[in-house]
Image 1 (cartoon, rainbow, N blue to C red):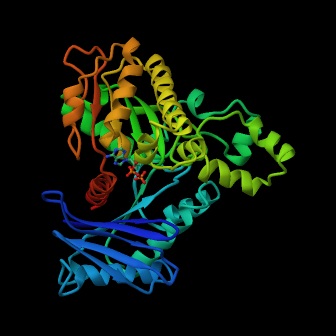
Image 2: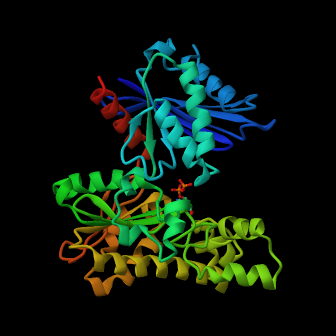
Image 3: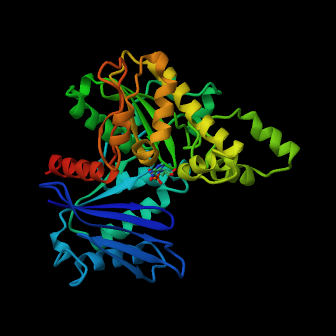
Length: 400
Ligand code: ADP
């Protein structure tokens, strides 16, 4: 089966074409700066990467160009679009309605549209991608894979905020969580690698990329998660602040005369590693600067401290913990951050293995703790696109 995976952002389209038989990637790429005069399509087929200046005013035009590249005689991998069997779409917010991936029909489109209110930056471009792809590839099944689905069965004590009940019933204010596809992928992979049944495994999965989040997994199911009604809550991220006292917002509105829009922008785009360090939102830059720059050093310290604190909390609420799993760009690659997380977890029985930490990089999976560490810490590279392809295949086969 050939599965086309699409991830539409407001100004970009990422895609991968999978052959399900061996889960190989036939082609992949991304179109960036969509809607501007500087749109570029980066298309990779096999080992060849092509960077093509394109005119892509909207998602429909962008997707058309991607499908042309895939079937192009010179740089393509298919002779016709008819070879594509199904399409998997990443959709950020499925609200309280979507607990699983679903075949896209009018009802599913309506759910995505309704939840655009809760994810105004994500659901509308996701929907634009779905509309364009369904029009270009009308005869095959399209599947929506929701970022929130894996996190949609949290217990009420974890998803409800201590706010007036009406804010939940009328305005849907609650924890939804994000990165669910990544947390689900590493949960399944951890069960495989640790030789445990998925329905028995207890984990703390930690996704550390530009966005950072943590999930407590009991018996293979998510029971708590650090991101909230929006991705702003929880861990310190590249540019997002994570947990703060909500009264900071009222105080700064009054004291510094900042508008709601400015506060929204600063907490989401100018805080986190960038805000504290004044150097960069990128962990590599912060680590490089930390030696002679106290602000950069503090940014890294707060980042690690928050992670360790959350792991302690999740360790307490879980019935047991088979492993802590680190993933995402930082989790998969940053030896100093992994070392510091392990050091912070010594009280939980974590014994770091420096040699293993040095070798589990560049897409490798494995433990970075010693065999007698009572709480193992694993690094497991995430693969959200592959997860979307697998989900898409499963939904299509179930609906045959
Ligand atoms: P996104 O969330 O956008 O998918 P990634 O998962 O690629 O992002 O993670 C980006 C983060 O990973 C950045 O902070 C970057 O510094 C960090 N990162 C990537 N490679 C390394 C590395 N070799 N060492 C340290 N940090 C790294």
